[in-house]
Image 1 (spheres, one colour):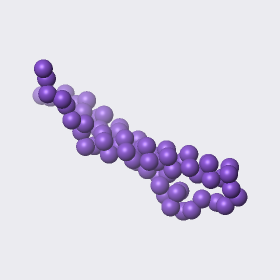
Image 2 (cartoon, helix red, strand yellow):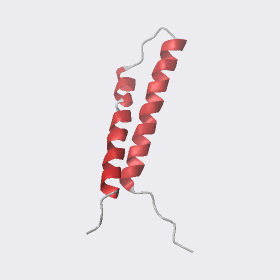
Image 3 (spheres, helix red, strand yellow):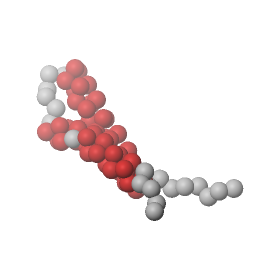
Length: 69
């Protein structure tokens, strides 16, 4: 039996930030549909976590896919 592998911290950070960014984007649309109040600036800033998570995921993929010499 092999030991369980841990999720790399960079991948975990990418998944969490991407998920929070998507959640912020969805909540912005819900707020705009349900009420006539515009979402706060904090929600727009939280939506920027989505591209940050994507960038971290690409960096993790490039680092993990490197060949060992």
